[in-house]
Image 1 (cartoon, helix red, strand yellow):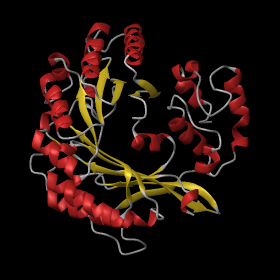
Image 2 (cartoon, rainbow, N blue to C red):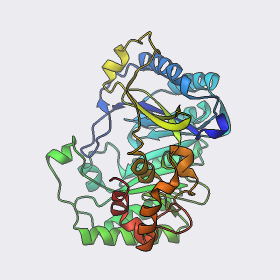
Image 3 (cartoon, helix red, strand yellow):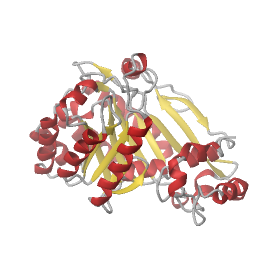
Length: 386
């Protein structure tokens, strides 16, 4: 029954960028000639094939991620959202987010996106300072970011996230707080403030920059948390901060182990299916390279689809997968969510939970870390991976 299933979201991947950033390990590809109409047509077929997983549920959220989704035209989003609305239920509470690069936006585009039904923007600022922006390979300036926020507000957006990095090469606490203060001054409703990490398959991995020492990173983190709290930004996840009531509904659905369809080149999805009468997460991904995705034909049997790598999550892996998401949330989740979303009894985890609670790492009343546990989250999670 629908009420027994998790909330459902939709992720749409737009894989094109003007320039590949040296820290980025996302599925993004440079190219000025974007086959917009062909990609739109394939996204529609992709969504139709995934409709078997919706089970009559309304969409809690839609997220257009990338790449750089703001490279696509207004007409692209009008057409796609009209198609989604005809096939899935969207309510007045459905959060619809578009990621945008401040170097690819303009006032008319923002107004068009808002008119198309997009009601939340996530702007990839990363820094306002020219030296750091150059190091990060960004194509925008600090003034571009300020202008983009102003344009978005004038276009009617009242729910805006700013992505901001800290722990950048050569950055000290003063420089990190300068970025954070400028972001707060723009009055967004949400801030994603996260530490730069070096990922495989990136330019920074091949040619590593010199990052601040651990003591400096700790000082930046503590000073930033204090500043955010002073301005009423509540930390509700490891690197997510919002004004009251403005948490990202789409990301909350990930962390609360909800379901999400993933369409587009390289998109991932997680949906709940029944196995022996119990809910079980099925994960899948889509063909990664844009040219392969565009050229893919739909198999006739057993189901027309671009899904590859479909597999039911092994029950032995579910405790770690669930906790890896849920314990990122500052308030965690209620205990009854674990059996609801995994089909596994919480009793099986009681010895581990008791041990972590005895060490002061987990709260007694729910599946949530203490402040100490959040600082040592990787150590906490390691208990669930054996």
